Length: 222
Image 1 (cartoon, rainbow, N blue to C red):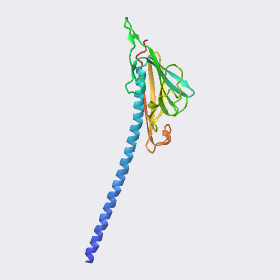
Image 2: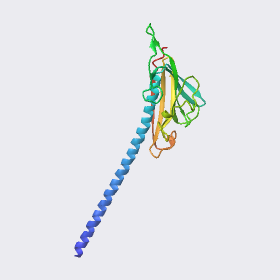
Image 3: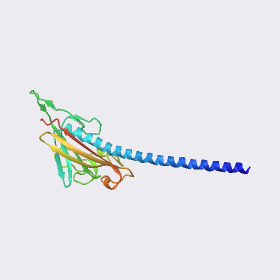
Image 4: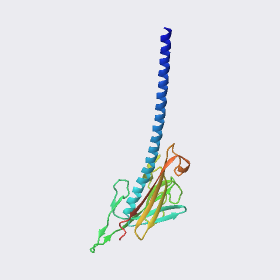
């Protein structure tokens, strides 16, 4: 009886040891999986913001009559003069696809000049010339710099508490008037840990994505 009890105790000890080993291995695997998932999520978030924002800018540039950079203080934005005719495809009250006004009897494009579309970084007010890390799109009927009332809130904000592009930290523009092109660079960074302020990626574990493109404005012949 005594020997049987001793053998059972050894078995129980072995089972407990194996269980602890399995639990330990599973814990390590779970931690590794969660860490890799956090890295993949951060990488995707940074890439997605920069990629989609570059798409937005490229769509405006390619449909423009002309583009130029404007600097106010330490903020440089892109201003594009758009054709007057076009379509509001997404229903936000602003044209997002542009067309020729007409063609002359000589076969020349005739384009009526319309509104000025802007892209720049600002704070929550959307006023051009104010430092911030929020990507804004604005619209004016003249060449004056956009104010907060010209900024398109539906573009910068998905909801009252959620930005469209929360991970963008910098946007840069370069215009080549001779070739009718704009080169633009969108930088975004996503933190692996809890979100901090965009632009502080260097002091936190994060992924940074830099998207650089060059687009040609096709309606430059008036």
